[in-house]
Image (cartoon, rainbow, N blue to C red):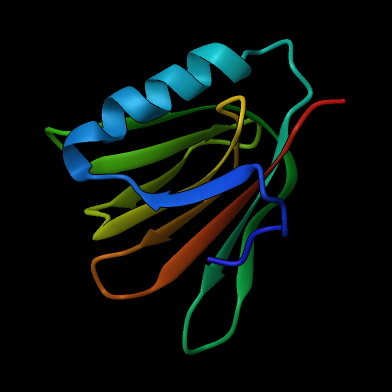
Length: 118
């Protein structure tokens, strides 16, 4: 995963059994309807890279173990990824997640870059 060069950022794979708690903590700590955090979501595949969302207000991330569904709550509507094979996060020292990379079941990668509110 390509992330900004910063020694205070740790990139790690999040095990499936920890996804719900990991993203619930991030959402509760850093995201709410009154914040100004924004996100870009880019799909990287053989046909070329395409943005699903660009600089969109961002309110939360949830993982539903029953459905094996990772969902980004965006102002423009939810973005859902079913059956993620791998989930990687670039986490800053204070717990803020600046980037998330998801490898979908078919091998396609999605990269979400989170822009912290000023």
